Image (cartoon, rainbow, N blue to C red):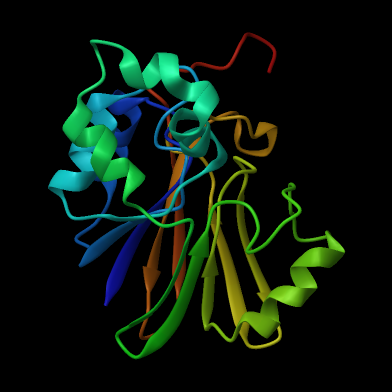
Amino acid sequence: MKLGIISDVHGNAASLERALDLMPDVDEVLCAGDLVSSFRFSNEVVARLREIGARVVLGNHDLDVLAPHGERVRASAATDPTLLRWLAEQPERLDTQINGRRVTMFHAVPEPPYGYVYAETPRMQQWSGLGADFVIYGHTHRALLHRVDDTLVINPGSAGQPRDARNGFRSSFAVLDTQSGEVLIQTYDDPVYRPHPGE
């Protein structure tokens, strides 16, 4: 079974659509959070992910919109209340089995305190204790594949707000073959965010 994995779209509907167009045939799409930005809801992004039946977890920007201080965004006439309700129904963490493989997905970390986790971050070593074959997360906007004991950790990078100088500030997504365990990280030119000259 092939899973398309995206994260950190941040309301960039054009980049999300580009990722979906470039993605090979997948059985399901997973999104590791931050569909929207803290101060701007995106009907287009939320509607598209709902339309394709993506499994979604909430990121810190999504939670900001749903928190008390996100009232202005929620009350905006531009925010579709049906899509807002759908977003609010999504979990912060997903633990499931897909094709007989255990998958855990969250946005940044599986439990507080919140933070940025990279391959060299000691905290990642604890993730083998989650009991998953695959751990999927986002938040860093940097693609990563890293094995911790028997657990493969996958960060697809950002499909909407590229920040990674290592790939020339390009957006990215991942495709996971759950049977073979092979992962493809695909980078692409973001149709909205362009690197500045010299970057």
